[in-house]
Length: 387
Image (tube, rainbow, N blue to C red):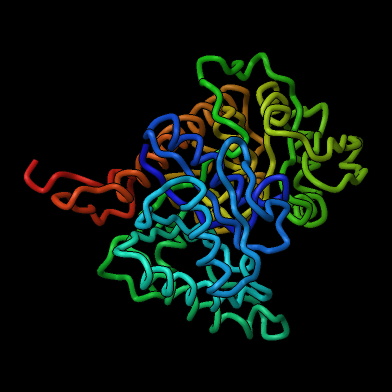
C-alpha cells in the first residue's frame, strides 16, 4: 500500500487542532485512497515521544528540534514501517507549534537536509496558519517579518501549497512570491466526524439550544466581547439552553440563561450533542470562516450557524444563505433557519475529508504524464494532459 508521512506539531492525546486535522485526513486516505499514513511529531515534549501508534497510525516524535532530530525521526518512521526512502511528505504548518515565537528556522533547514539525503522526495505543505500580526506594542508586530521569511522558505521547498481559505491564498502568494504557481484551497473539515446527512435530524425536531464550541480563547471572545449579541440572539431565537464545549469550565450567565459547561468531550460525544442541537454560535471574521474546524463541524451536522464576526465573507459563503449574522436576527423565521442549516451542510459537502484525501493523494502520487491545474478556487487539481 502507498504511504505518506505527515509532519505535525502535536498529536493526540495532546490537545492539538492541527494534529486532529491530520488524523482525520489520515483515516480518509486509508479508507478512500488506499494510502497508509505515518506520523512524525516535531515536538520532543510530545506524549508521542518514542515509537507508538495513534489510532492505528505509526508515530515517532523527534528527540530534539533541530535538523538532525527531524531527519532521524524521518529515518526511524521509514524503518519501522518499511516505507521507501522517497515516501512523500505532507507538512502541516502552524509555525507556533514548531518553535517558540514561531521562529522555526530549524524546520526549513531540516526539510532541506532531508531532501538532499533522499532522492526526489515530494514535499507538500498545508499552511494552517500564516504570519502573526498586531499593533506595535505586541510581540507579533516585531516577529512578523521573520515569520514571513520562514513561510517564504517553506513555500520554496514545497512542490505543492495548500490553504483553507481565499484570504490565506492571497497572503501566501504575496509573502512567498507564488503568483505564478497554484495555491490550492481546501476549506477546513470537521475533525469530530462527518455524519451521513440522511441520518441527521431535521431542524424542526432539534432542541432549541445554542452550542459554543472551541478553545478557551475563542469561547471567551464569544462571551466577553459578544455577550450582548449572544443574549439578544437567544431571546430572538427562543433558545432554551446554552451548552459550552471545550477545555476549561466556566460558569457564565447570558441574560437569564446560565451556560452549561460540558468541558472536554471526545469526538463521538461532541457529535452527539451537535446532532440534536439547532444552533451554533461563533465570532470569527467572516473571511476566515472556511479556516474554522468549529464552523466546519456545525455545517457537517446541519446546524444553523450564528456568526458575530466582522469582515466580508468569501469562499462561497453568504450571510443569510449559509449562516445568519448575529446583528440581523430580528426578522428571521424558522423557515429561514432551516434553509441556512441545509445550505451550510450542502456547502460543506463540496470539501469533505474524502475530498481532502483525494487531493493530497493525486498530487503525492501523480504520474509523470499528469499536471496540476492551477485553480486555487476548487479541489479539482489533476487532469491528464491529453484527456
